[in-house]
Amino acid sequence: MDDLYSGLNAQRVISPVAVGTTGTGKTGKIIDRKGYIGPVLFSVGYGAITSSTAVFTVTVKEGDATGALTSVADADLIGTEAGAGIAAGARASGTTMNVTKKVAYKGGKRYVQCSVKSTATAGTPVHVDAIQQAASKPAD
Image (cartoon, rainbow, N blue to C red):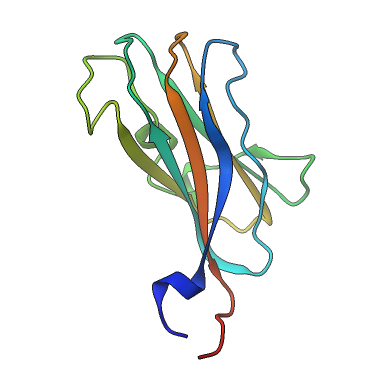
């Protein structure tokens, strides 16, 4: 079948949760790229951010084994981790709150992970999903 729906797989990486100042943030589920082609797109959704000093940082890691993930080189990303995050400043719906941002991994490692942390205790709901293209699509 040659359509967008049949060739993609979406997985929850981080369920909707408030990200606070624990220092560790929320670590995303490790995504196994086996059986998929092309980049892994991480969709990062932010709710209503009330603190103008809150900074949300997105980190993407990669590895050949799940226990040995390291930070991804910028050359292996489409977009940037900073671009998928939220900087401190005035809040406007659709740009710095109540917005979805993205970053994609295009490197060659089998496992990839996306995590989010915040510098402020803000009850801001954040969620992350991963979207991948299947190596083979269902037959018509």
